[in-house]
Structures are given as structure tokens and as C-alpha cells.
Image (cartoon, rainbow, N blue to C red; front, side):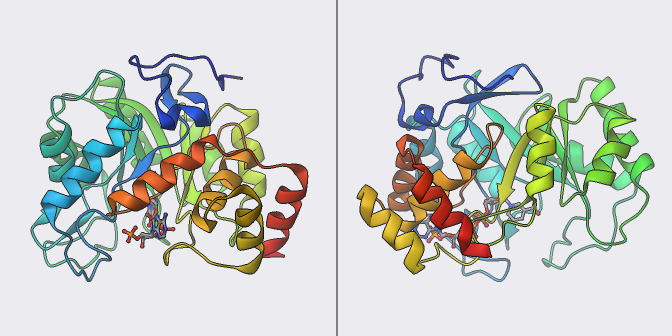
Amino acid sequence: MATTDDITSGGIADAPAAAAGDFRVGGELPVHRMGFGAMRLPGASWEGPAHDPARSIEVLRRAVELGVNHIDTAAFYFFEDIAANDLIRKALHPYADDLLIATKVGPGRHPDGSWMDAADPAALREAVHRNLRELGRDHLDLVYLRFMPDDGPLPERFGTLAALREEGLIRHLGLSNTTAEQLARAQEIAPVAAVQNRFSPLRQEDPAMLDLCAAQDIAYVPFFPFGGAGAPDLTALRRVADRHGATPAQITLAWLLHASPTMLAIPGTSSRAHLEENVEAAALRLDAGDLAELTALSQ
Ligand SMILES: NC(=O)c1ccc[n+]([C@@H]2O[C@H](COP(=O)([O-])OP(=O)(O)OC[C@H]3O[C@@H](n4cnc5c(N)ncnc54)[C@H](OP(=O)(O)O)[C@@H]3O)[C@@H](O)[C@H]2O)c1
């Protein structure tokens, strides 16, 4: 198992995010299990309102100061002319050697914000090059193929990313919004280092995939950790939070980190205060009673 608490990473082994322990993505790139999702940086939602870019840049720099070395982004994370990838480049380039920036490709968004229906191999290649340009990198650490319903055959699209990996433009491949069957088909083409699916205490719908990833040392990266609509404030979460002197958001993240040794949290926020609160959760340890109470949340 590649999960270990003793991997030192860029001299920040005692940073707050390191308290979550580490995981080696693809068996080789060590990241702290408490990361950051960049989707909320351009705006509160696809429809806005916009967030102040200077404030978002400050949030990114603070995340890295706190030891976050796994940032999740996509070229389709933009609102009007504010794009997550540009904010990341402005905030953090030149990048620290230990920073893993993960991105996603699949059906993208038109400049007006509307979604494309599909992504053929040419569109996927262009999306990879766009991420390279926007992030200012010569290769991408981790690229997920993100599935949308009916958006085309897997082999030619995952095969396109596998070819880009062979060309040295991508280090590791992942799948997002995926199933066990798609994972198995993709693995016939190239190794899969990470799966990014929806999972939270409120939507515990992916336990088989969690186990599959843990058994194969594949990172499991839950999106919408708070359920997609801000931190949930449910009675059970509050009860556990009160016992730990923590917030419901922190308990949510601690629960996720407990759910699997290959779980990498990427909570998204545009707020420095929320970022600091979220990263602090890396140090929380839940007991069996807490876990039972929280697992019952989605039943
Ligand atoms: N693969 C996919 O299809 C997919 C889909 C969605 C997202 N993602 C990725 O997953 C990441 C995480 O998802 P998400 O950010 O959308 O998750 P989320 O569960 O929707 O959480 C983000 C929301 O919670 C709020 N929040 C964050 N920390 C908080 C705290 N401590 N207290 C109260 N509210 C808090 C944020 O508002 P504030 O800004 O006000 O803090 C924001 O509204 C994204 O950033 C993105 O990288 C991937």
C-alpha cells in the first residue's frame, strides 16, 4: 500500500495539510491527502457571481503555505473571463517541485459558458494542450477523462490520452464520473492512477469503487465533498462536530479521509477562512462511534 504517514514532501512534512497523511499518486508522486479543488475560484457557480481574482489568488497561495500540494482544476472552470487555470498560474508559477496539479478533459464549455455534447480525440488533444498553455507547464501530472452520459466510445478517447502520455505530455491518467466497468476497460489500455467521482457523507453511493481503488492503490478523489451546495449542517454532523470542538465541514472532510486509505480530499472554496478551516480537518481523528453516526447519514 503506497499510503504512508512518513513521506516527506518538499520540506513541508509538518505543514497542516500533511496531518492527513500522504499518498503516492501512480505509485510515485507523493501528495498530502488534504488537497484543494479550484472550481469555485472563478465564481460561486457556472452562472456566477464572479469572485474577486485577487482574493482567489490569495486563497491559492495560502493553500500552498498550509502544505496543500494537490490542486484539482480544469480548463472548463471559468466564469466569463476569469479562469481557474489562469489564477493557478498567476498565483503559483513557477511551481514548487512537489505540487501536483490535476486536470480534467472531456466535453468542454463554449466561451459563452454552455456545455459541449462530446469530445472527440481531436478535442481531447486540444484540451490537453490548452491546459498545458494555461497552466504554463510542459507536461501535466494527472489528467482525468471525464465522462458525461452518451459522450462517445471509451477506447478511442482514453486511447488518445494514453497516446499523449506516451508522448510525455501526461504523467498519469485518471477517470471521472466513472463506473467499475469503464475502469476495467480503461485499464486494458493504460494504467489508471486516480478516480474522481461524487462522494460525500450525504451521497455514499460509491462504496464498491472506493474498495476497488483501495485494493489497487488507485487514488479516490471525491468531488462535491460537501454535497455540492455548501457545507451541510445536519444534526448528526453537528453532534460529532461538537464532541471534537470542530465544525460540520471539518467533520465531513475527516469522515471522507477515514473512508479509504487512498482517499484524497479536494474541498473547494473561494474563502481564505473556509480554506484554513478545511485544512485544519487534516488533523482530526474520528472514533468508531463517530463513524457509525456519520455512515448512517445517507441510509
Ligand atoms: N469531476 C467532476 O465532475 C467534478 C464536479 C464538481 C467538482 N469537481 C472538483 O471537486 C472539487 C470539490 O467540489 P466543490 O468545491 O464543488 O464541492 P462542494 O461540496 O460543492 O463544496 C464547495 C462549496 O462549499 C462551500 N464551502 C467550502 N468550504 C466550506 C466551509 N468550511 N464552510 C462552509 N462552506 C464551505 C463553498 O463556498 P465558499 O466558496 O463560500 O467557501 C462552496 O459553495 C471542485 O473544486 C472541483 O475541483 C469535480
